[in-house]
Amino acid sequence: MSTSRRTVIATAAAAGLTAATVGSAAASGGAPRSEPFGQLADGTEISRWTLARGGTRLKVLSYGGIVQSLEIPDRAGRRANVSLGFDRIDPYVTDSPYFGALIGRYGNRIARGRFTLDGTEYQLPLNDGQNSLHGGDAGFDKRVWDVTPNGPAGLTLRYTSQDGEMGYPGTLDVRVDYTLTDSGDFRIDYEATTDAPTVVNLTSHIYFNLAGEGSGGIYDHRLSLGAGRYTPVDATLIPTGELARVAGTPFDFRRAKPIGRDIREGHEQLIRGQGFDHNFVLDKGITGRPERAATLYDPASGRLMTIDTTEPGLQFYSGNFLDGTLTGTSGRVYRQGDGLCLETQHFPDSPNQPDFPSTVLRPGQTYRSTTVHSFAAR
Ligand code: GLA
Image (cartoon, rainbow, N blue to C red; front, side, top):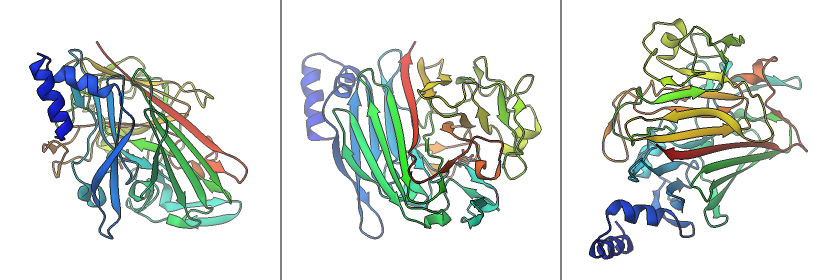
């Protein structure tokens, strides 16, 4: 704990305030500030930035643009960190299943790491069996971003991905803005331009547990998704190309239901993913402004999160590959289902699926995507 925070608490204690009260006061103001968060093996210093606004406090690393901590209040006003992660840099480099990270150049899988664009075939690194996952073994989650404060509760993160990096064509200039709004919503704006035709699909890989990271499983969280269809996958988790109806299947989240209700149904798709690990086709489609995609509610704490996005898809991943081998931020071990991801995106393997919305970006065009996480408690 910093000296100043200790002083605040001591002063508050003298004034008869509780720690929770101090917390929410501290969450509502102050310009973005940074502090050291260790260094990489090559000596590169990593910084951690803190933003606070309207009851939300967000901590972001220059490494991978990682959301290292996201604190929001419960129905009693008590804040908890609702995003899985680590308390130091090393495990982010060596062990992390993309905790909190920015994902690029291509979120999710590309079959056999191969695609053809304008008649040229490109080969990407295979880092997920026979496929390429999340931009390859050194995707945007493993890069050091240039971070600058932007407004009272915002950060701009920049990264230039070189032509040929991880097998992708074109120099890609990427800008991501992380902003906390006055009401404490967490908004992410992505932008990218290229100097040669390429494919782009950016997302954020936060693992949420609205009861607090390290507190147990998320199967009692109630989830609703604005999706009447999803993209079923083959045995290697590549979409078959079909847009299957969710009606009458465990994939029907059109009305809120506990995540655990149908997860053990023995549906072939759930066996393949070891749970939910599927792209949902949002009924709203691609939109110019963010529109509702998902609502997540934890009845125990009362924390509620909604996700609005401009994207046409959302990967719902129920933390299936967490297996008790990682120790998280607060020193507790993460087991299967201890966090879930809601990754707004274009569909997996789009470069090989002519019927999916295109992920091609050409010189002169600007890739834009926005996702807003709003928080409440009830
Ligand atoms: C995505 C993928 C999953 C898994 C996680 C990270 O959600 O779809 O299969 O790779 O990322 O482990």
